[in-house]
Image (cartoon, rainbow, N blue to C red; front, side, top):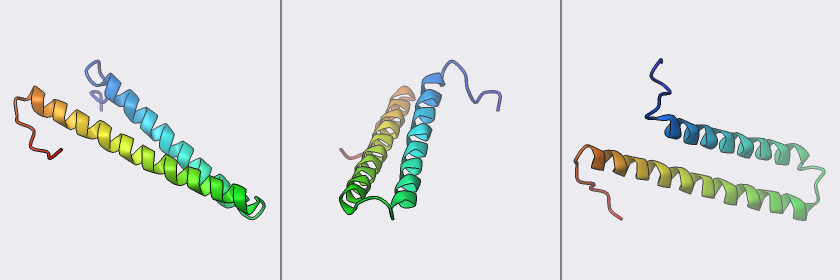
Length: 86
């Protein structure tokens, strides 16, 4: 546990914190929309669900891109040939 955060992985840990906060924000938005769903007009409710789905999709794509980039950098650092299809 003492090597969880050090100078070498500080940027990675900050990015993990950002991703965690982004997911918590999305969860809060989902809970708000479900809680207020009976009161909101239909058009507003649909915009909320569209926004939630777009935000979630972008969050998934960003996380996949970030960790693929980190994986490829780690392979190059260790002298291995990346074998992922592009």
